[in-house]
Length: 117
Image (cartoon, rainbow, N blue to C red; front, side, top):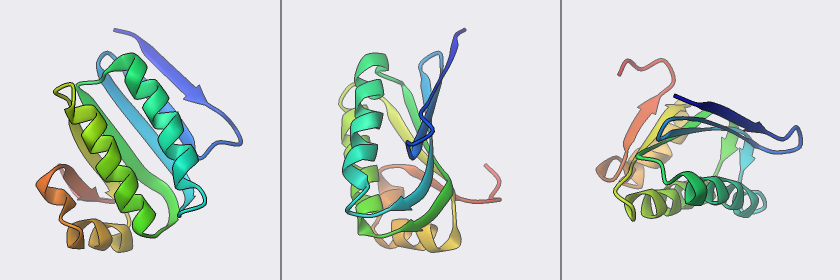
């Protein structure tokens, strides 16, 4: 088992991998200004690892608009293309509501902060 953490202090993304599981810790605001950079960072690592499980951890997200939904949907497409699964965890009540209204629970497991698995 191998553990790698990629973190850039200017980045909104911290990526940890453990075996074929990749966890992405997001922080800050996810909007149309920031989503493209976040997508690029996640996709570069996903393309290298081809994880069986991609976990997007929203515990550090302070704001999200519909760009966050697009971010999740695109990562789902990428990980499912090679047979992987997606989980979205530690969503604030607001982010959870947006994800639920968008129907994302049909393609990925979504979980609010403090919810039990």
